[in-house]
Length: 135
Ligand code: 5GP
Ligand code: ZN
Image (tube, protein in one colour):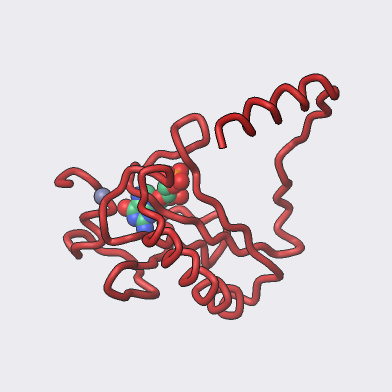
């Protein structure tokens, strides 16, 4: 993919703060970190999002994430971390080359979790049935 910025990073056409690389995956620091140590785990193959990414690539990413996240939180002395894969524009995806965020968290960082809703039982039932039918 010629115009994909993450392909260009993978191919070393543009620079990044790499923290890890193997045959299938790279990890580098996010250019606009939520917190210090915010790291992106990126397959070398171009796939546009989670749903388009082959299972074996995803399992490799997740296995590596476990190791990379442990190193990241130790390095920046974080108290925890969030892992996320934003998928589709409505969910905030802006780079259409699969990537996983490791976001170090500090008990003092002041970030809040997502707001929540209370749904009534009929709606919960309706959603559950619709999902179950598709699986
Ligand atoms: P998304 O919203 O698609 O899940 O996240 C894309 C992430 O990529 C953002 O957090 C953004 O800061 C990061 N990003 C975008 N362009 C670059 C870049 O050129 N280099 C690096 N290191 N990170 C980037
Ligand atoms: Zn790409």
